[in-house]
Amino acid sequence: MLRLADGLQPYSGMRVRIIRRPTGIVDGMSLHYYHAGQAYDVAPELAEYLVASGFASIEMRRSNRSSRQPRNDRRSVHRAV
Image (cartoon, rainbow, N blue to C red; front, side, top):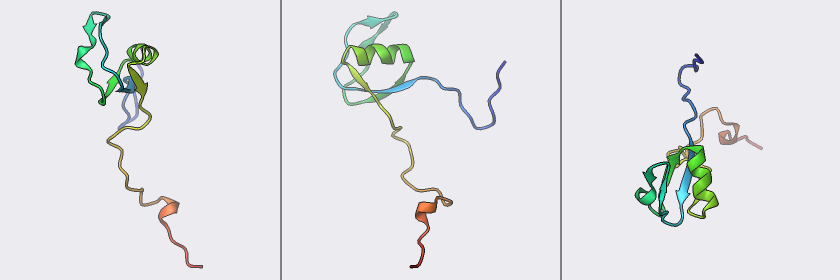
C-alpha cells in the first residue's frame, strides 16, 4: 500500500464551478444538488461530463488559498538602492 508523507493528502478530484444548473442523473446521482455560481470538488469523470455538457468550468484556484506571502518569499524583501 502506498503511504503518503505526513501532511500530504491524496488527490481526491477536480474542482469545478457550476455555470448553468445541471439536470439529469449521472451514475445514479441526481445533479439537481449543484447550484450555479458554486464551486465543488467532484470526481474527474463527473467534472469531465459537467464541463463537456456546458454545465461547469474547471476551477483553477482553491477559494481557501491564503493571499498572504510566505515569510521566505523573496518578493517580500525590499532592497535599498
